[in-house]
Amino acid sequence: MNSRKLIALGGGLLLGVAGVVHADATTSNDDLRGQVEALKNRVNELEGKQSQNWLNEQRAEEVKALVKDVLADADTRASLMANGMTAGHNGQHFFVASENNDFLLQFDGLLQARYVYNHRRNAGDSAGSAFALSGSGDAIPGPRDSSSGFEVARTEIDLSGHVVNPAWTYMIRLETDRNGGSLGVPLAWIGYQATDTVNVRVGRFKGIFMRESLVDDGYQLAVDRSVTEGVFGAGFVQGLVGEWDVTDMVHLMASVDNGLHSGDLGNNFANAHGTAGYQGAGTDFSVTGRVDVKVMGDWKEEQGFAAFSDEETALFIGAAVNYSVAETGNSGGGTFLASGTNDKDLRYTVDAQAKMANANISAAFVGDTFNADSTQNAPVFIRGGGAQWYAWEVQGGYMVVPDKFEVFARYEWLNLQDAISQSHPELITAGVNYYVAKHRAKITLDATWVLQALPAGIAGSGAANTDLLASTTSDQAMVRGQVQLMF
Image 1: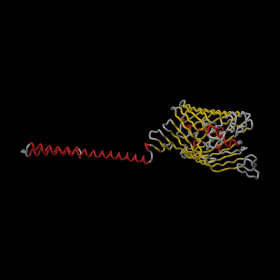
Image 2: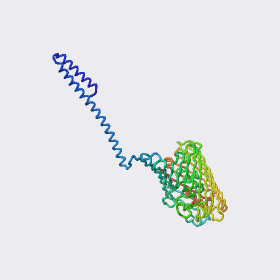
Image 3: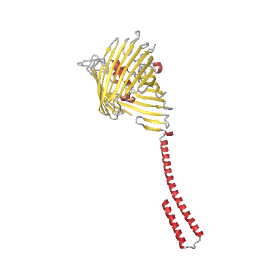
Image 4: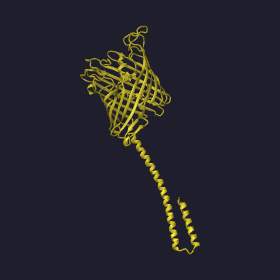
């Protein structure tokens, strides 16, 4: 009952009293007072019931809210996420985190499955020979050698995040070696964010020498990186690296490590004694420095080569240098350094990358000056004293259908010359990308034509991820198709 009804009822009762007084003038004042008091008590009673009903509704809402809180807490505890722990996908990573964000674990993965067809002519081959090639066909004369088949090029699981607080970071990558299928850990480092602009990492990480190396596996333009990167790139290394954002436009990196490719899966080239850790280091020391300058755009656009429609116009310029000295007295050898010597290796590179209006282009020049100890044997890649190697490459792509269909091409020229031999491999690669969901799901088809001979040392260990084979003539062609998923 609302207040208007109470007032009407009270008014009616008072009028009734007035009528009684008028009709019966003999009624005593005491009786009238008693009736009025009774009516007041009745009004108070009705008002109390009205207030009680309102309180009951408020209590009902409070009870409902309490039930919701209890159910939410029960769901949290039932999912084994105590203390307010959260989990899910934030648009970039699957994650598990503590309520106060002191602990974070992120999950990422990459899967690349490809088909490769390779056609080449080997030493001593002749089109009219009746002998078929066996195995790789490098020693037996015969017709042209064709090889084809499927391979799982990469299977990677990344675990990253921070511990104790966001300043202490970590990264672990589990990856299968596509040659033997064994599981390895090419990335494993502990990092510390000293300030907003300075961080350091220690462990196993990607060598900071070439820009193409630093662009992660899933963000390449072609099916895989270039032969140039395979020959001159640093691969994975073990050591200490620091990074410094000097300004918003300038980024510096420097590392001290065990030498080029010292952290590669299944690679013992820099492991002089066939043992792990510092005893297997193939160098007295190896140092690398790199500078990147953002002329325009956003730093995140440097992470991949493709130009998507939601990205700004961007231009980046970089340069790096590496200096390595072979470990004195070792009985083993390194990838680029001879055994038991003080061989010295100096390599340098400059590169640029640009994106604009669905188009991208990048270029790099890289050189290597190798000074061998003349009293020792030549290193793995058979370079004599004072060898001068250099190469340059350029690649670019254009989104014919924005964010969906891209055409691309790459050209490479290498000068591999020393006192013993010389070679000038020249390669052209062209292909297309179909982006189902940008790099997270894409299909790539490319073809490579080798215009010059490709030495065995280059096609094998140094550039294993190119799928190219050794050839002593220029007659080699390769076609690849790849499906990629990232999560």
